[in-house]
Length: 99
Image 1 (tube, rainbow, N blue to C red):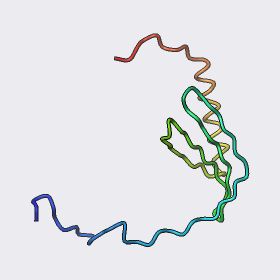
Image 2 (spheres, rainbow, N blue to C red):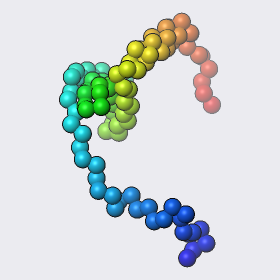
Image 3 (spheres, rainbow, N blue to C red):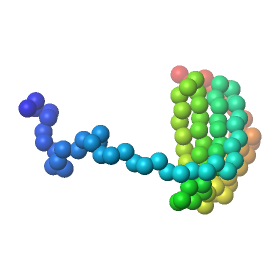
């Protein structure tokens, strides 16, 4: 055994040995896409047996990142987004260049 290889107190956890989760049936209710500079954002309102949610996917040159917001949190999310838009409009851009 190599010095940094110690047995785990949790046993052998091989993540590939578990059976894959069955796919969850999701219905798409609405989709909108927006291109901002070199980024594409896709907003998809979906529904599954657990409820409705908004999936926001950012695609930059084939690399994708996604966040999911449960529908009950959309009003709070919108409130914060509105505050950020207002702050961006009120705050002048910085002339300083990052080092």
